[in-house]
Length: 373
Ligand code: ADP
Ligand code: MG
Image (tube, rainbow, N blue to C red):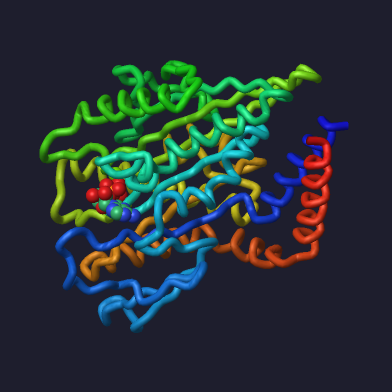
């Protein structure tokens, strides 16, 4: 009776999500910062899923438009940005694997989206905190039927080396598939307070290794992984889902003639891993038989959570200033490549009768649930 309705509701919900596509790309434009009032804006206009960039002559014709699942303008709030991420959190509790990435050049707002600004308040918390707080809330709502257990890991990938941010030693080279960094501390959490403590610890550990001249956070990937296990109280069956929240290294190209030594090595590692990520996502979007996971540490670690039934969301960040237009265009081209095929499918599905049909069924189930309460 009641359990079946709940179960059906969950299934349908995920089918609707599937129809929207398993790979989604959202673009977010950072506002101008502080005293930049007379700087030229490269963003010409934003219309739903389309962003148009004014391109100076050096970069070709005057304007160029890019399409994504969603574009958030400079005035979008943290709350608005998270609203469109929410469905994925539900999927994690339903046993799906999810990857959420923040991509963009240094200074474009990746950390702002994922963690929030330095002066954190309840209102400007980023996706990481909101995701976990939603997770706890939903788990609480389901506690009559499912009992959830949540634990987290936090790691950093720097120059293809993995480091545990919840401990302090480098994790030995691991040859496992998927996100099993068994050596990385897996910490049980039961409230948002626990999560905040851990995020702070991770942040402090991340700063170790950074110097004044070398802000390591912009040249390493950081990943907060949430493992969820749900036990069905009637059937005893166990659901497992995980979610990776990844703040990627800055995507800017460095001028090879200007950097040498460690900086050049870092840049090469970043370039290689970001293009490996792009290759994996676009080959998943094109449903290629071979997906090149093995080309970087990042894609190896995330293998189980990319592709198959997994859901991927990439937040692509751009800076609005004219002097960033070169990076902005290469960021948008990267994102377009990652999104193209799947976006095409998602668009076709948007108004399809399948979705309408499922929506109708969900409405009916909701009504049935309401009657039970
Ligand atoms: P990244 O992590 O990509 O290097 P940050 O997230 O650190 O960039 O953002 C750079 C600066 O811009 C920070 O001071 C940050 O607080 C600010 N910033 C970024 N995005 C926004 C936004 N949407 N609203 C207000 N300030 C932002
Ligand atoms: Mg950052």
